[in-house]
Length: 259
Image (cartoon, rainbow, N blue to C red; front, side, top):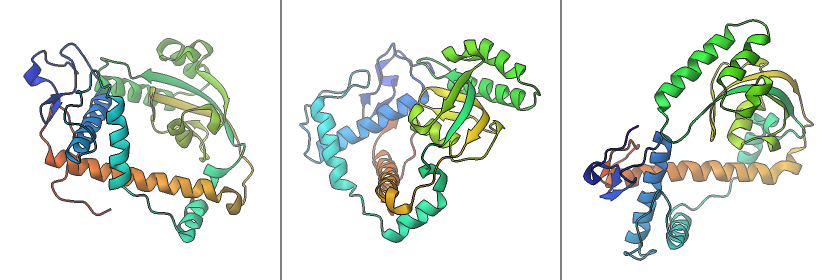
């Protein structure tokens, strides 16, 4: 996405620019800056941050602003303690997530999201690649495409990443990769902080399933994180609905949301 050079036309939240005139950002990074600015301004309104706190430069906020935002979220979004029943229900529905030692033999084609990239065009290329590889037979095609297309150094080895456990990859990648039974090219693009991946699972090894009691703390933490993420998303929607947001698409709500 090209960023306009006029200061007035820059993406902004309540008149505070989110970018510099010569910056070009992917849509996700722009939304992230907008959400951070919504929280920074709300911290000022709540008296948790000085009104003369400097506006972010290229997305970097002051140390005081970071602390104020943490205090704001702690005050506004208390996280309820999950019940025993909720923990057991979540554990029973996600047994594979808590398996110890589960791993998969994987290769991929990475379409990296980098500053200035046209995300829509990148997604279209990734989806076309996914269709191509799902419709191809034999192993050579995947390796050839990875070598010519992937933005990952593994492309030189046909996209091979080897055996991966949850500890070997980003959490968002592990969630899509592990805890499933699929073998072959996954029928969906895998999104991670690095970009879009076309993934092929060559083999799987199931892990040992521990007792609920031994993983209860991890289950409870997972539920707390889910609850906080939902509450934060709703809180940001409310703040966006009350703000003047220009040049960036945000979900917004004009009335308080039930949490």
